[in-house]
Structure formats: structure tokens, C-alpha cells
Image 1 (cartoon, rainbow, N blue to C red):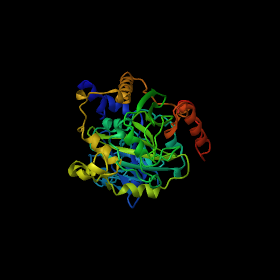
Image 2: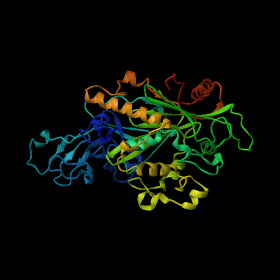
Image 3: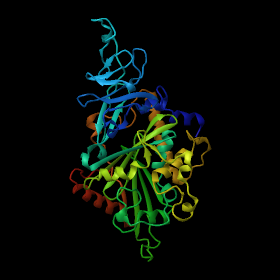
Image 4: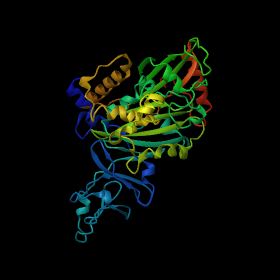
Length: 450
């Protein structure tokens, strides 16, 4: 990749080509839980913009610029009162929509407040994530993805901070080959103990742990197809090794893993037979980002308390910064690397991914890459990204900026981590997943694009 193209695709501040593209979509701004407590206000930075997100006294959300339009004071320490957010410098009060409601230091009857407005943005809350729209005009409709449609008790949301550019953070999630190495475990746990943990459950249709499959089959056959929502990614591993009892397998069964890139900047992967993870990568600025994840079950309700318990000790609050990072060498243990994990970085795969993407530098220098056949999804996504950025530069709508009647057609998509027949695997898994969704209390079978 040429240096100028790398810059074009990674910089997301106001006015930057990729920044203008990304602002055409709803963006995750914060977790709902960040607004719990005595003072429901946080001050996120998104794509280089400093913002304040708050709930007013009626519980309604507001998303506004952080600097007071009077003389630029910091509204992150403002007072939540009188139906809005009040600046502590001179007492100016602003509503959720950015209107100035009061200028108490001005003379009585002053018309000044009618001429002042604080930058404000549309905001909505879905299944534990607060979303904001920072772009021009009316926001598009969100597609009818499972993570948006699921009942609240079937979803869990979490996030984490990465000290690197958003694009390399996303690219690790759409790379189907790396899991056999970066997330390799030398021993297999009891899959019954794998609830809520990625790559720990048994693959659907078998008792083979996903850890064994990834460890023993490191050259998957990878296919990638463009879809209305992004890219469908298929990784096939034909099972011709040994089973859990050490008995040979004859290749008549194949492990199928289907994941997705969901435009603009998410990936969608299986957690277990019933639950999928949709994960977005949102720039803070050009050298750091947050990932926001929605865990969505088409089966029974999720155990949100347990899933949070598994994750909260790995971060520091309130910034959700990982406890392991560059400063402590990501917790690297050479003895563990010899005997337990491929990396020596513990059993939390988020730390593995963090090391991989932060180690590329604050912004990966893609002019030095040597891509192979296993990188076909990376190449496909970069082309889609470049095309979308160019469309916005021409004044056109990029993919998935949709009116309601079209957004409702973008559903699912269906992920898969399962073992079935090598011959006719497509038809087998189409039948299995359609039945699973038909039996769901809220999901339903999808068309061929899912």
C-alpha cells in the first residue's frame, strides 16, 4: 500500500476523507453502564471530537460538544440540573438539543440565549450501548442486525481500549487464519466450563473443543464473498487427524467457521452455538480506539452478571483500559509460552489481540507489508473501504447508509462454528441454522445473504 493511501484510510478526524466517511454512520459512544451512578455523565472522545454524554433529570440522553460556546469552558464538569447541563463558569444552561436555556449572568430579558447554540448530536440507546450520529443531515436507519433486534435479556455489552489506529484493530477480527496461532492453547479445557469465553466451547455438532481444532489445523481453506452487509468469511478445516479419544478421523467431516465483516467497521463472530459477538472499532483519535462488543443469543437469555464478572478484572475503570499492555509487556511469561499458550500472554484472547495490533505501531505502516493468500479478506475490506471513502468524496452515499425500508432487509447475519459432513456442508448447515433460528423466541430464518 502506498503511504498516501494508508494515511487516507486511517485518519478519521473532522475533514479527513475517512473521517467524513465514518461520520455517515451511527457510532458507539459509551456503554449504558457508564451512566450508572450518582452523576450520569461521561466525556468521550470520538474521531477526534471531544463530547459530553449525559442523562437529564428525566432520564433522557443528550450528546453535545464538550466546550461551552460562551468562552470554551469544559462542560465535562458541568452541573446536571434544571433540565440540562449547566456550565460552571458563568452558569449558562444547555438542553439535550444544544439550545441555550439560560444565561444567568446576563441582564434580565437579554436575548443572547436565543442566538447561542451548543453543538448537539442524535443519540439512541440499544442493548447496553449508547450510539451517536456525528455526520451531516438526518442519520440513516440502523440495519436490522440481531444485536439491535434482540430482547434486552438476550444481549450483553462490553468495551475495551486499544492504543492503536482503528483499522488495524478491526483487521485482526476479520483475519480467519490468526486464531490457529495467536489464540493457540496447548491443552484443552472442559467445554462445559467455557461459558462466555471465546474459543473454549465445543464446536457445534461434536465434542471436539475449538482449541483442539485451531491447534491442529493451521491452514484453513478461506473464502470471502461480498454481501449487502459487508463480507461473509468462510474458513474450512477438513478433519483428518485424531479425535478426543486419539482415534483417527477420515476427512469425511469438516469444521466450518463462518464469520462476517459488517460494514462500516464491525466484525461478527461466533462465541458458541447460540451466541454471536458483534464488535465495532471506533476511533478516539488516529492513534487509539475503543472496541465495543455486543454478545447476542438466539437461544436463551445470557448471564450478563457472569459475563461481566469474567471481564471486569481485566480492565481499569472508568476508562476500560486493559491491565496488561506495553508497560508490563502484556503479562508475558516465558514458562507459559513453552507449556500452555502460543504467546505466553495468558488465556484472555483480548490481550492476545491487543498485543498483535498495538505491536504494529500507533498507525501500522502498510507500505512494509507482504500479504499472502490467507490475507484475502484484509485485501477485500481495504478495497471496499477505499471505494466507500471515494463515494463520500464524490458526494454519494456509501454502503449501508440506508432509508428505513431498505435497512430492514439487512438482517442477521448468521455465524457458525460447527462440524458436519465434508460433502454438502453448505446445505447441512443451512438447515441446522434455519431450524435453530425458527425455534428462537425472537429470531427468525434469514435469506441467502445472511
